[in-house]
Length: 86
Image 1 (cartoon, rainbow, N blue to C red):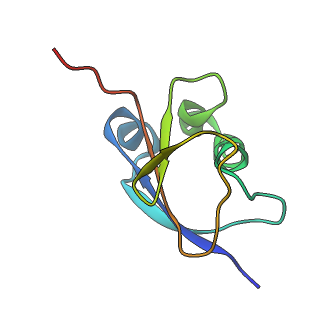
Image 2: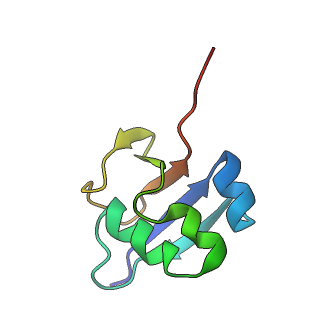
């Protein structure tokens, strides 16, 4: 069975990858936010903005999560740089 998620990219990440979002079928073995980031970063140069070690925040279904957060069919995963206020 295919596990589809919706991915959203915000701010500088949206600019880097050239899109605001996509529907995505999770490959076998990609079951967490961290694994998804690694898989996306492996796409190539522009996608390195999502690579481990980069300052990127993630939310699943509008709740802030860490890299170990599990993913399920129908989840909405958002990636965005940290926001500062002033």
